[in-house]
Image 1 (cartoon, rainbow, N blue to C red):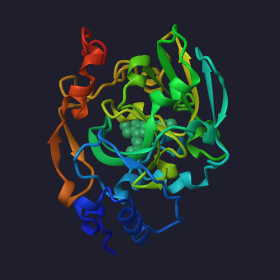
Image 2: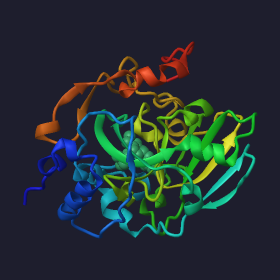
Image 3: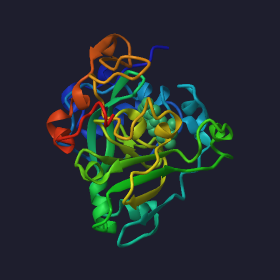
Length: 300
Ligand SMILES: Nc1nc2c(c(=O)[nH]1)N[C@H]1C(S)=C(S)[C@@H](COP(=O)(O)O)O[C@H]1N2
Ligand SMILES: [Mo]
């Protein structure tokens, strides 16, 4: 059976009409129904056409469930995401273990259509639902000495079969400099396409940093720590010569084993084919100022 793309059923002007999105998705989706989320459209969205829900939820990287692109969709279904809490600690005024509902409290949800680019040189456009990380950090109170934010994913090998392999030193870890974390483009995402976050995409809550390679956007977060030292990060620990702390999308700095000058947009036909990779994934006007005076070939 031919799977319809979002754009086949939904004319562009209706994308931001929540009722239309929900009606269209409900009719197309097989499998368990996810909770619907109301979110306002965001001025930070790109006008690029989103990939289909099918593409976004069937071609994933989530090594906790295996290394294959189909593994997350196949094996993430058994992950328990309710209850869920996040430890927020380190250099903060109000450290604690926060229930997910507390984390979300008072944070305005928006739909943000972002370009998303994996370091493996494929890309998608994803209509995330989320809120600015800065809103959460402001609420817990960042101490003046904090310079970085470290994130950790859940460790639960009973539900995450990929964690039985020691290839990664679990938990999956990521980090941002504080100014990157506070940037308005940096969001905590709790859903996509108007749905609660699918498990393969990092339910119930994950980071999205659209100007960096996809591996910085850590999934299923259980800990956020404010620190004064650059934190260890999973891919940098595995292969420091290939993956730096910053990992900004940069077509001028190649990966040691392949070019980063172009990318393959996932999805055939309408979206298929290669395209040039844009500096900072197209967000140069917004974020270049964060790196003034840094040599991005050194700070890769
Ligand atoms: N915890 C965790 N987060 C992760 C990963 C992972 O393996 N584990 N993979 C990263 C990589 S390499 C990419 S490209 C994106 C993929 O996000 P998506 O599957 O929602 O497209 O998630 C990132 N976040
Ligand atoms: Mo990636």
